[in-house]
Length: 108
Image 1 (cartoon, helix red, strand yellow):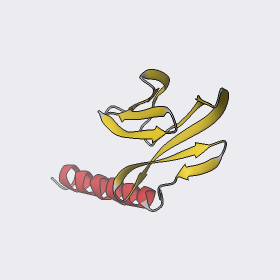
Image 2 (cartoon, rainbow, N blue to C red; image 1 turned 180 degrees about the horizontal axis):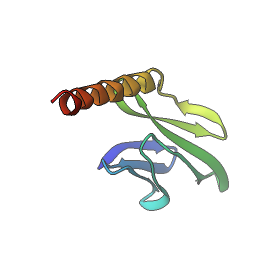
Image 3 (cartoon, rainbow, N blue to C red; image 1 turned 60 degrees about the horizontal axis):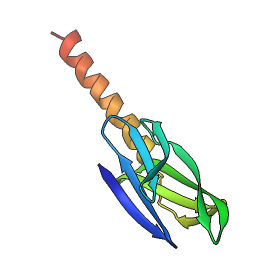
C-alpha cells in the first residue's frame, strides 16, 4: 500500500510498505530501492536535479503514531519524523504478552 507521495522539484517519490515488512521506493514510477524489514530500513537512491545526480536517503522507523519516515538530501534533512519511545512500548508489550501466555499455560 502507498504510504506517502513526495513531490521534490521535478521528481515524484512514492513510498510503499506492507504488513509483511516489504518497503519500496519509486521515483517517477521506477523502483529505485526495495527492502524487507520489520523495524524499518534505510533506502539510499539518487535523484536527477539540474542534470546532476544527487544522493537521497529515506529511513523508516516506528513512533508513537505508527510508521514514520525521514527524508535526507546529501545527509541534510528535508523531512524528519520523531522516532523515540516506540521501542520501549514494543518491549513492554512483548513482556506483558509473555507474562500473559505463561500465566495461561503454566498455572493451568
